[in-house]
Structures are given as C-alpha cells and as structure tokens.
Image (cartoon, rainbow, N blue to C red):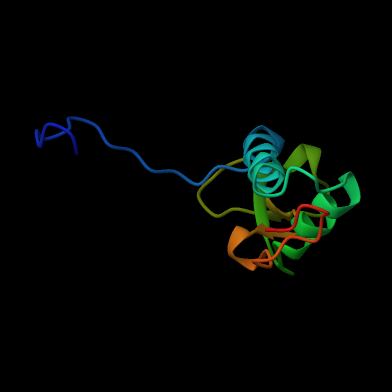
Length: 105
C-alpha cells in the first residue's frame, strides 16, 4: 500500500478490452479536453480527440470461436479464438498543447 507502506495481499494487473473499458477512458479524455478549453466546440473536441489516436493495424482480441468464424484458435484455450479488433489506441500525449477552440489556452 503506497499510503501505509504495508504489503498488499493481492495486487492484480490485467489487460482488458471492449467498450466497457473504452467508454470510461474516452469519456475521461473528452472531459479533460473540455476542461482544458471550455470554449471549444464539439468539432474542436472531436478534432483534438482524433489527434490523440495512435493507429494500430494488428490489434488482437479474444472471443469464442463460434462467434467469430475465421478467427485464429488460441492454443491451450478450447473454444477461444484471436480476432482482429480496434482501430488504435488513445494517447493523450498526442493532443496539441494549444487547443483549437475560441478559448485556446
């Protein structure tokens, strides 16, 4: 525990995927962009968000083979397949420092 300095019995880290993970991260990114430039229009915010994308060509997600015909079976995981997913990763470090909205800071 970083506050108490005591050891932590369980500490887990996992890679997660899907809209249930993407939605809160993208929502937070939108809120940060709007907070940085309250006068920014919807179009300005969308443009800034698009600037934050790192394209990825070969992202892979897991899913049931029966739901994704043609996906690649995962060795050692019966019924599970790897399939292409996503268009890229959100990287807020890519957003230009100066906002494009009327209140540009």
